[in-house]
Length: 170
Image 1: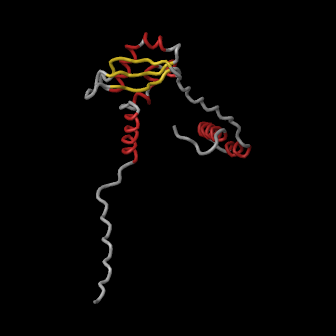
Image 2: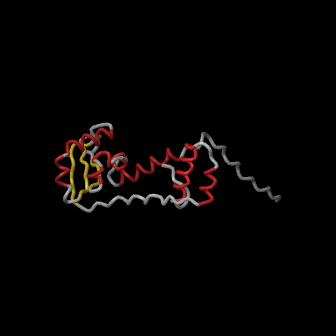
């Protein structure tokens, strides 16, 4: 009995459509993580200092947003606050609810639940750059005739001299 030659595997299907930008996928992934811990809106965490102000933001943070089942409004926002700040937050509760609802775009929050507890301190600000420019760099800047361009390049050289690693764009 003659052997039949092995069949070749089918050719891969051509790709249909375009590749999706990673930014489109990150929101979905982050949204799942936020929902797991009680947040359906990342804007509350991202814009927390804007909601409570920079003074309160150091001493409190949002914990979770609980909405009634099947509803998108009338929820309770739980906030962790240090013991000294908790009573002060009660005095400005109506303003905080109004600001948070304005950022969310609808009346999602109806009341606050303030829990006293530890609040992680924000990371310290990076130290300012040293500003020491090498003599070789300073001598090349002297050859530039335009004073504005020279000042701008000198500022850039100072910033790069005081940093480690590649520059970060903010």
